[in-house]
Image (cartoon, rainbow, N blue to C red; front, side, top):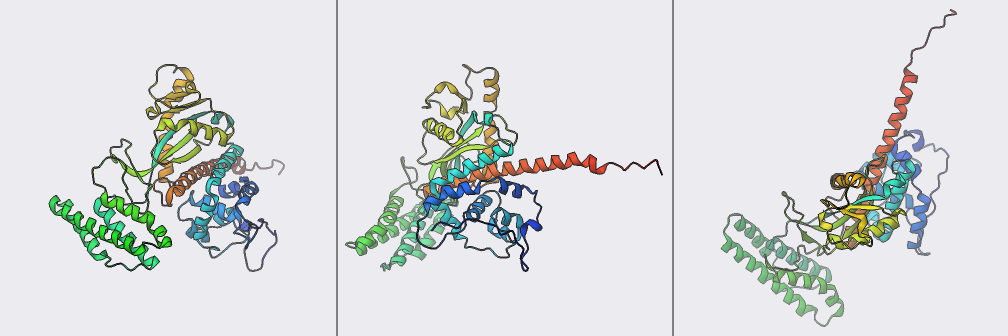
Length: 444
C-alpha cells in the first residue's frame, strides 16, 4: 500500500528534542533537503504500490537513506548519531535507534527498478536550481566507458570448481535432496592443494587436484539429476545451477569463447582496458556522460548506465546520446569521445569528435576536445568516493542500479560542496562588517 504523506507537526515534545532546534539550519545537508522535490519523487513512485496491505515506509525516509548511502560510507551506523542525516530523511525529532530493518533498503531498491533514473534527473535539477549547473553546460558533453568490478575473487579453475560443489550442496540441503556423498571436505582440501602446487610451479600435481575436483563435481551433478528426475518443481529449481556447474566442469583455462567466471554471479565478464596494473578485470562495462566545460559547481554526471555483454563502445553511443537528451531535456550540440568509439552509429556523426582527430578540429572545438580527458578523474572519484569501484549488488539489475546511484551520489557530493562554498563566501563577506572596530564618540 502507498506510504502516507510525510508531514511535520511543528509542535514540541517534552521527552524528545526537535532537530531544527539543535542543528545548524544553514548546513549543506539541510539546504540540500530543502531543494529536493520530495513530493515529485513520491508521485513518481506511487504507481509501484498496490491499493491493499499495510502502508509502506515513508518515501522520504527510504529515498533519503538511499541517497545518503551513495554520498557517505556506513550510513546506517552514522544515521543514529548524526542529526543532519536524520533531518535529511525527514525526521522531526531526534531518534536514538534506527527505526527500520536494513533489508528494507534492498527491497526498496529492487522495487524502484528503472525509476532510479528519476533520482539522477532530480539531482541534476537540484544542481541547476542551486546555480551549480547551467543549461549551457548540458549542450557539450564527454562520453566514456569504464568497468565496474564485481565482488568476486580471482576466478581460478580450482576456486570455481570448489564454489560449484559448495553451491550444489547448499541447494540440495535447502530442497531436502539427500546426496550419496557431499565431497565438501575432499573438495576443500583439493582446492587448497591445487593453489599450493600452482604457487610452487608443480603443475602436474596441480592438474591432478583439478581432475579430482572435476570428477567429484560430475558425480554430484549426476546424483542430483537422478534424484530429481520426474519431479517438475525440483527440476526447475536445479536447472540453472546445474547448467552453471556443468559449464564450470567442462571449461578449460585457455579456451576461446564465453566462459563462466563466477558461480553466484554469471553476468561477470573478463574485460581488458589496457591498464598496466590490471591487464584484465572481472567486471561489467558502464557508460558515463559528463559536461565538457566545467560548470560553476564542477563536472556533473549527466547520464550513467551499465552495458551488459561487453558491447563495442561505438555501437552504444547513439543510444547513450538519445537517453542523455531525454534525461536532461536539452539537445546535445557536440560530444567528445576517445578512440574506442571509432565507427560509431550516431544519427549525426558530424557532432561527434574523437580524440586525435584532425579534420574539422580548430578553435573552440580544439580546446573542448583537449578537455575530453577531464572525465577520467570523475570516474576515479565515483570509484573511490562512491560505490562504482566494487559492485556488491546482485545480478544485472544490481549492476544497473549501482551505476545509477553512484552517479547520483557524485552529483549530490558536488552540490553539497557548492553549498558549502557559498556559505563560506557569505561568512567571509560578513567578516569585515563583524570585525570593524567601534569608533569612539567625539562628543564625550
